[in-house]
Every structure is written in structure tokens, then in C-alpha cells.
Length: 219
Image (tube, rainbow, N blue to C red; front, side, top):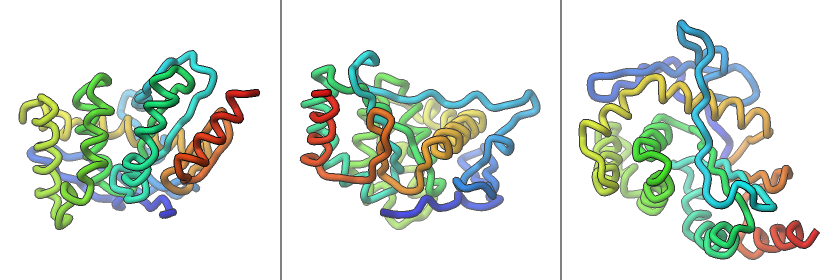
């Protein structure tokens, strides 16, 4: 399981004509700290969770994952779809996805996913995980951005919408601030990690995940 790594330190991340700033956090969870993610008006409003399923389901599952994490892509290919079919869609669990940012590419991917709104978020996320190696490509930033824009277009957005999202400094700050606060509160130090009914678990296969859920559902 990979460590959570700091976001690029003190970097101006230029996207088209816009830019946003991410600086080092010296606390236990790397990233932009809550104090750093402030505007002139005060604290940044935290980006909302993205979720699937019945909010009143008997069990809540929170996944912490990075769009650039190969283990997370494998989880979504081999485990998540079965969880969705057997537990989320049947009303047994409420699933919450919380993004972790190892790097700017993961943040950009999250911004594109959120650009589609809550209704399209998980569909875009699925494309991002399924084609992870392809959109990261050579790792050249402009190539990555264009590949992410292509996915956004497939989801029905135009270039103006995508560029507005990718250049939205307040969106970036709110996403990083939410990551920082949530991951620190839950003691997250790697991805994918899960909070199942209040208990923390590391990556696992579908059989082990289902066994944990079934045991909790039977209590």
C-alpha cells in the first residue's frame, strides 16, 4: 500500500490561463492544511462528499482513494462493482467516496469528475479508474490535461465548462481542505483505505469485504 505523499511543494500549477497554489503541510497528513487553505474571507468551505446509495442504509462505508493510485484502480475494477450490485444498489450500505491527492494529476482528475455534478461524478470516476494508465500516459502535464478533458467531453461537457472547472481556484482549495480535514480525522495513511461502520480497514478483496459487511449486517 503506497504512503500518502506530499503534494508538490510551493508549486504554481498552471492550467490554461489560470493558476492555483498548493503549499507544504507540516502536520501528520501531507497536503494543504486547513490554515493554508484560507481565503481573505476566512475558512474555505469544504467540498461535499460524493456518495451512492441510501443515506439511511444500516451501514456507511467511506473509501479514501486516489485517482492516480494503481491499487485504487484495481479495487474499482475487481471489488467496487460487486459491492455496488450486491450492497449499494440493494440499500444495505451508503457508500461515500473521499479523494486523496498524491499529486496534481489526481487533483485535476477529481476536479473534472466534480465538474460533471453529483449525478455524473461516479460515472466519470469509473472512466478515470478504468483508463488510469492511458490518461496519465507519459506523465507530461499538458498530455494529462488533454486526456482528462477528453473524458469530460465523453461525459457531455464542453471545453469551456472543463476549463472553468480546472481553473477554479476555490474548487481546488475546497477539495484539498476537505481531504486534509477528513484524512487527518480518520487517521488515513494509505490508499485505498476504508471506514466501515466507524472502523478503519485497509485494502481487501471482495470476499473479505463482503464477509465484514455481512457480519455487521447480522448484528
